[in-house]
Every structure is written in structure tokens, then in C-alpha cells.
Image 1 (tube, rainbow, N blue to C red):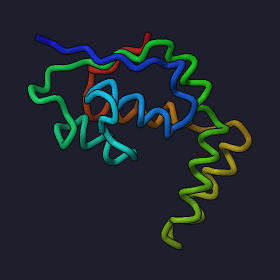
Image 2 (image 1 turned 180 degrees about the vertical axis):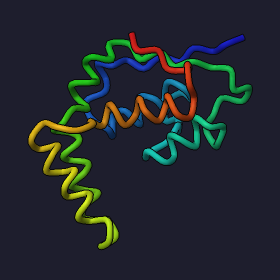
Image 3 (image 1 turned 90 degrees about the vertical axis):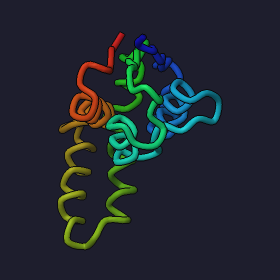
Image 4 (image 1 turned 120 degrees about the vertical axis):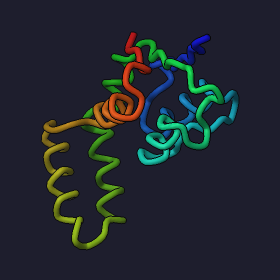
Length: 128
């Protein structure tokens, strides 16, 4: 039987609150379901934090609220953090992405998350 987990889009005000919302939706208060993009991909692919039987869907209610909260402003904030930690060989590329985000162009954090769902767990994300 497919288990449905629900994310309340009104609770997602940034990437940090997304990690909290999805962790608690899947694994209860204080629950873990990734705290970075790679960990989310791992959880969706069957790694630590994945529901035991693997038969689940995630409904993202009011996802448009989250889409706005995880838009270009949040993307620029995340890319700025990433640029400070990036390997010197990758820093120029991250800074170019950051410049595009600050101009309101390019994929957003919301887009990154949806792409991970589509790649690692096709059909398991329902945007409502």
C-alpha cells in the first residue's frame, strides 16, 4: 500500500525549512530526509531515511508558496554560500550561476529539488 507524505508549502520559507518540512513529513518530528541536495537524492534513491518498503509518494501542498520562497533570492543566498566553500576550480562557475540568480535568471532552488525528485524518484512527487 502506497504511503502518502505531505509537505505544507506554507511552512517552506527557505531551503532550511524545506529540510525540516520533508524530514518531519516522512519520519515524524525531528525526522531526517536529507539536509542537502546529495542527501535528498540518496534518500529518494533508497538510502538512509527512505521509508522501509519504498512505496511512497510525497504531496507538496501549496507548492506555489514554496516555489516563491525557493525562488531566485533564495537561490542567490544558497549559491553565495556555495561559492565561499567551492573548490577554486569550480568557484568561477558558481559565481556565474550566482550572478544569473541575482538577475532573476536560471534554475531556482525549487527547480533543483523538483529535478532531484524527477531523476531519483520519478512519479513520487505530486505538486498540489
